[in-house]
Figure 1 (spheres, each protein chain N blue to C red):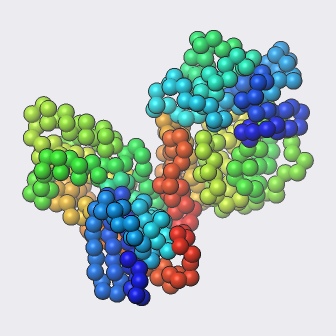
Figure 2 (cartoon, each protein chain N blue to C red; figure 1 turned 60 degrees about the horizontal axis):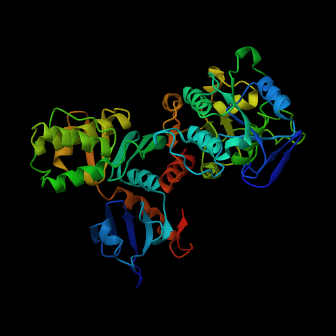
Figure 3 (cartoon, one colour; figure 1 turned 180 degrees about the vertical axis):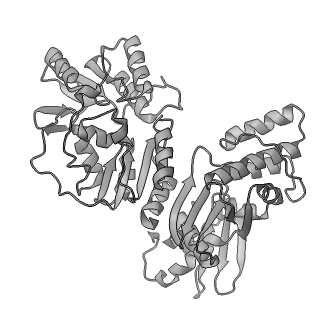
Length: 233
Length: 262
């Protein structure tokens, strides 16, 4: 990935990897299961669960998200949340300084990946299924999936059951970030219309897309070449 | 720490737990009088072993997997030591937790010789917080604090006092790697601070933190103190962290980000 003077940065998440060629501006989004097959995958700067051993300079994911948010958003005070496959990361700024941050792991996590698993299994198009005003309790991905399967066994259509799961996830996210009146959303769920329509009933939001952490890596470009492989910023 | 060899600490000797010696086991912060009586009765020369700590005992599977790892350590250590435990002095009051009380009950039903201890407020002490507020590596600080449970003799070489740059609230974690992220200017709060003060179960002290100091509120997953950690983290703008068994990269990254961005 790195060679010939081209700078390549990557956000290697648990389920999706975003790779940006800074010279050409080309963004490649691939399933992380494809990344792990690329034995020679190596980046100049990386973040994410799967990036630590594939880069010259590694950056903490939450720090990459925070710095990426600051580079994109001009507001003095704002909340930024990244809903990923494995976890949810949150940073609240006041006067452009970090006021609060959090990162849910283990219990309460893996809900994003579960939405994908359920969607693939039941062949769901998240751009067309309507949001549900009902929800299931998504304590974590496993508990949430059990609730969805139970709903389906009771006769609720898979589309509605999964929309209820998405609604449960939205409630988790909204509570996790402290119920702000508006927020900035990062991550793959910026492209999930069911999620977006559901969260719209809770607060105003601005979807920033999947590349916020990549923006947060750009500040480390001067370090490339000066650091030993695998170093943490 | 008790992981290997012999560690001499002032007036008593703690030995490697999996030698053939006989031990007096304890968990939590038993009343000093109860621990003293146990030692007088079963032998002042017996080594003491803190059963809360991970000594590498194999999993017994006695408790559900959704049990706080510290409580699981108690059971696993006791079962592994078996009849090498002359007695278990068990903190079962408000100074520990209901699961500590249940562990003591289960161990007694399993045939262990268990002496219960409930640390009453009348016996609360006012010990100087030389480690909690001192400049020292956090792991060393917490180890020294926990050693005061059995040997409260004040250190002749206390660390220098320091202004807190960060805070660590909670019990000693199962996996001390978490503590390596903190600077030596980290102050200790929560139950561990109560231990150094000689006031286990003092809820007011347990909930005290210095406002404005970025603090990590740590609990083991499935510990009832998660309620307090969540409340205090919200109130003081800190970071609640829970961890089941060993820490992983994500937990370390979360704490690292908080320390660097706060």
